[in-house]
Image (spheres, rainbow, N blue to C red):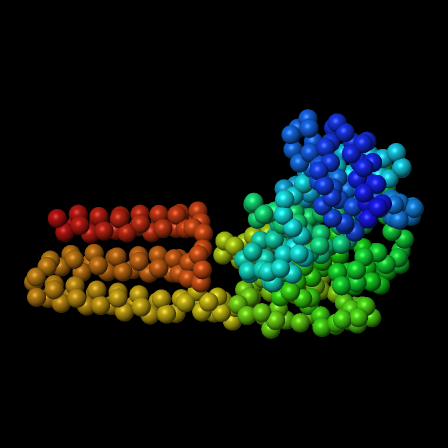
Length: 403
């Protein structure tokens, strides 16, 4: 405790007046984190200082400085931003970064249990978007886990933090530094490592995608995809075992979401989708669109899948009800015409309304038949507009002919 107090005193002395250190927030994987106020911009920031113990390790120091380089190179709403870096008089490096008022996903899971399915899907999609931005710059995070995902209380936004063991992938650019982690060196927690990481093989962007799959399972179930406890069991499971089916661990999982996460957890990196593919697919899930997932576990929709989606949206029941109502309307109008109560044109108008109403009901059921509230999309306005125009034109022609 004494060393922490001494470090805080050094921070207050050396960072003033630019930064006013408020208090210690906690301890991360690389060091202590402090809350401070940046006077010039009138904003709260977080100051991360490498722990003295790790500062003696040249590789830990390199990883810490790489975190600053990696994060500072990225500007994304779902990545914790880095503002500047520096060194204290005792040679400890520090990073001034974005302050996120909230908690980690790990703490949220401990306090509240697994997330709601829609919330978990959104968080995974946001992390996929963040990784897509990093991957475009050749940066691999390597440590996707709930502890490194921050949850912002005010907005509900998820932000990826701690690029402490990130590496720049060699892309033929000599100005980019080489990987700092030696081949075969185990850096990280085996629970959140890909098969290739555990085997000491090359780590690529698809290793982060594997981490997304692991993150998805934990957010949705509170545990990982493998029934393993020890490090040895975890190693064997990641490398050799198939993950447990998500739908068997939690009811009410969208089949498409399960398919996406299964694709992320393919053993071979080349069989996994890219982070961009994952983001696109999970974003489409929220709008009801269907996009095939690249990767070995991805399958084109079969007739069984289509029928399953129809049942999920209660389409058979809705069509039966609509068919009964439409048939009843036609029968009533037909009887009224035969009794000379109304002119013959009424039956034709009812028939047009029933026929154009059929695709309208199908569209509404497809986009809004699932349980829960769904967002109204632009394509629906367009489709309903076309159907209304068809109904209006045909009905007008019939009326003009009758007149």
